[in-house]
Length: 413
Image 1 (cartoon, rainbow, N blue to C red):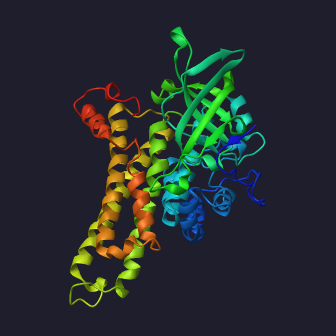
Image 2: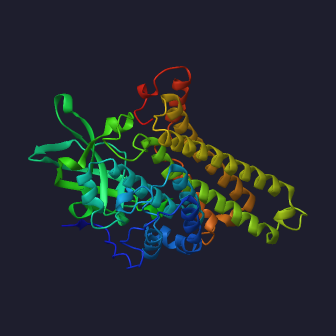
């Protein structure tokens, strides 16, 4: 029975494309085009996402109905077999409409990717009756109140910052399980109806992600819905363990699911500022408009260059993940550390770009009715995700550059 302290979502509207498996999955260009087509709707709903602290039903239904929650779902269950670059394309395109909508889409696709690494019985649980099923996941502290039970374990615990919690049918969390040689951290898959979602997401930005806290009280998790965490992080899965060629690409896929929304938001802020510049006065100067003011032109150039640089870094991460997957090879520790550093640099560049743009636009950009202030808040919060912060990525990359093992600092590499 679901116990929630937030309003439960109503079912998504029925659509002719839901619960169907296409004969030929859409290619990368088609997926990007679908995402781009949703930008006007997401832009229109973005303020409501921010206010309600979750996506509107029409936004989540549109994203799902366009097949954009199936990017990383196993193809035999209707998934598209999309690669990392395709995921990034979609996330950037959706981010131009709404950062929160893009972030949720990225996280739920990454959650489905992690669910795809579980055994076949878990796949049947998740997608057997619904190819559009969505999995939220978070790489937070593992629950430790775990008891062995016949055929699995029972767990009591809570996991904060669960983005997309209002729109997921399944949740993938971490728990500490086992004894002796079997001891360690495991992923665990649990259905929504067995969990409580606590309404804790009262943040300044990325409000529409609904990154609430999920709580489990003596929930039984069968053995087939447990998966060793360290083997996934270390790139030790074989084709017998998981069919997807991306089985050893967790950290790369994880970062791509987040940074696309930041790039898309920054691009949208740039476009908005450019569109308004010909009609806005250059206050305190003799220049007739912002578009003709050299200081504003300089700021626009600086912001655009930062966004271009962010995209170059982001696509190098995606291309590296795709290349190793297609070659059925694992990235070395230096490449993995560099990718985490690059994802952090993407976040920094997007944050710097919107700072530049808001300063150029002027204080009216912070009017509550102006979309720039929402984008500014979203990117400032999103760019401070734990995966990007505290200087850890810099330490990892520097450690690897001098020939040391970055896992001495963090396992998330």
